[in-house]
Length: 82
Image 1 (cartoon, rainbow, N blue to C red):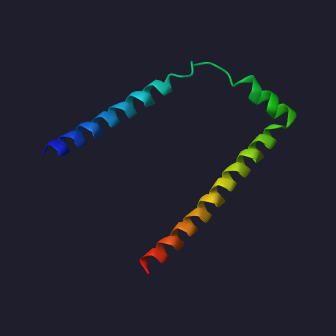
Image 2: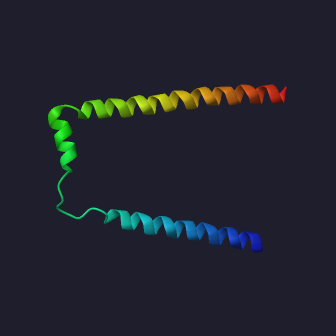
Image 3: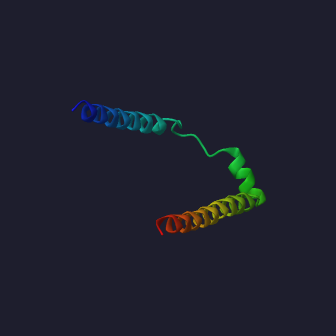
């Protein structure tokens, strides 16, 4: 009974924290503000494509790494279960 009450309190606290932080992030940017100058400069000079390409390469590398790691873990789990 005590453990169940503690779990419910913890989940309610997490939900409250989530709701509070999402509400404050909605007001993080003042209305009527324009896009940052850096984005405009990168877009005008064509360097924004270099930034996007670098981000895509990093994300793709992380994805390949996670897939290979998952395969290794699955192989080790099969060896343990034999």
